[in-house]
Amino acid sequence: MSTPRLVPLSPTTWAWTHDSTAWGYSNCGLVASDGEALLMDTQFTLQDTRELLDAVAAAVPGATITTVVNSHQNGDHTWGNELVGDAEIITSEASAAHLCQEMTPDMLTALSRSEPTTAVAAYAVEHFGGFDFGGITVTGPTRTFTGSLEVAVGRTAVRLLDLGAGHSAGDVALHVPEDGVVFTGDALFRGGHMIVWSGSLSSCVTACDTLLATGATTFVPGHGGITDRAGVTEFRDMLSRVQETATAHARKGTELAEAARLVKAEHAGALAHPERLFTAVAAAYQEAGAENVPSTTFDLVEGMAQLAAG
Image (cartoon, rainbow, N blue to C red; front, side, top):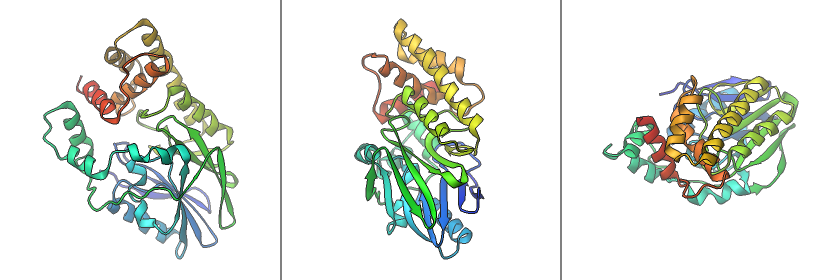
């Protein structure tokens, strides 16, 4: 479980943050000016999104949410979209194109309620069994972009950045230049290891450089605590080290599962969910040209589950 709260960052920006780095508890962003509001992402369930919207209403009474930006299409960032369905929903073209490949609420419900007789089922029950995905209608974007996009929220200008395929097939960050704030989506994790679903580690590293190039001083990650430029740099450098080690194993022909075990032993550190390093190793192997690398959501979850089980 997590206890979220809306944290003011400036007179026009807030971060919805969780006190847990567990699966499914994603951070959101709020920008409000002159009676208009923009949300960066929604929550995993309708109940959690209603809690977010109640906090928004209390922080900016009377403001209308005119825009929702989805950082990518994972359900923990989008499955509350229907509750702000009157707003324009924006994401990148690459992100929108991947929506049809995402697991549905019904699929995740079935998996997380199944008998834990396999490593995948046991992992899903442990990490997702406490969520109620009932009643969700997956609601996709109404507008897409490539490169970057300027959006006005009242008198406040925000800039959307298409980060490409890193954590997901299409990652988006939101920069509020006048406040020096960036909402990074899952291009940045704090307190827990990153998952690389559909991109490459090189792209993940480049995305961190793009975040730093904004000149911002405050960064709200997709999961974990708010950080500064040093936190982004630390995360980027950790990804680079993981990539270097995993690529070396790929070139030596080390079997992927064994490489993941070795990378975990070397790079897990104190961060939560070290089994997620399986996805980073798989991404490095794919980038190095290895064959038969797991790439589907199910196969990647299976690899994480087996690595977690030891």
